[in-house]
Image 1 (cartoon, rainbow, N blue to C red):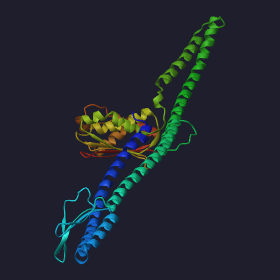
Image 2 (image 1 turned 180 degrees about the horizontal axis):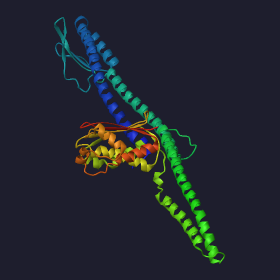
Image 3 (image 1 turned 180 degrees about the vertical axis):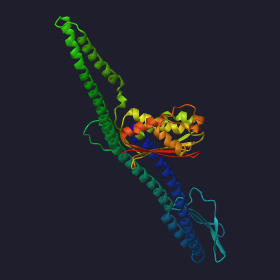
Image 4 (image 1 turned 60 degrees about the vertical axis):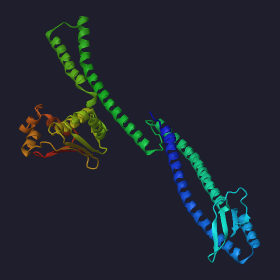
Length: 410
């Protein structure tokens, strides 16, 4: 399981390192080709100038002047030069290691005046370009190292903020750095408050019932004590009164049993439940190759878990039962209009069928053919829930073109 620290430091560092090394590699290739092109052009210009001056001095001046010029040129530009006259006699050479093998003929006005070989690889220009290349890389790595240190400090600081935020989720009056974590905190506090309210309502209900039971029990205890201590004589009237008090207790007991914790309403986001519902029943939808498209916005309603489950289950499963294979069901929650929409492209319903199911349990013949099961009371359950929550339901449908059920909440 990944941690936030691992995500912020290890993964980001790895990504940045890969990006940086790739960038440096590409920049080096680009710099190499660009600088090599410029280097070749520059040594071409220098060689042309050297060639022309050498040809001129060989023809117009004496060889001693040429030798002085070549010596000065080689020393100033740090290059290796070897020049021979037209008879092949060496006039000047600083090629002590005999590296130069390729000579070019030197002409002056189409007259051969000698042979020259030059090596610019060791020139000051070549060294300057090499030093520039090394300097560029050193600068890049220095900036990268500086950036890594700054990034590490930043990520470490942000990691501490996130850890601090996470530690304070659910703690009242906490201050958060990150909006997303604060949202989770607020949702948790809200849900906790609603759950506490739901629990308190349930407990209050139980206490109220317990108080109602206490009175008949007290009456029974008084009669029992009086009869045991011979303070009262057993009579039909007393026994009937005791029976009546027992009946009161019997009437209250079902309220203990029937009251379900999940039937107490509280404010909750129905889109969260819908997401869980779709995920839970994914395999059932896949059995008919039905795809579920959800467009869910946050919509908070004061509704019990039981009623929300019934509402979503009945509407969605109706769409499932009466849809054909390879079809689509859309579930939409619109926060602005406070509307829940479930739309299918199944068998559809006629206007008469819609009117009938709005009044009482009813199933059309087409529905019974496609789905033999069912009692037709599904929409009656939906109507009861909608009435209880103060919502409105609207059904649009057309035979063989599907059904669209819209529930508008207050």
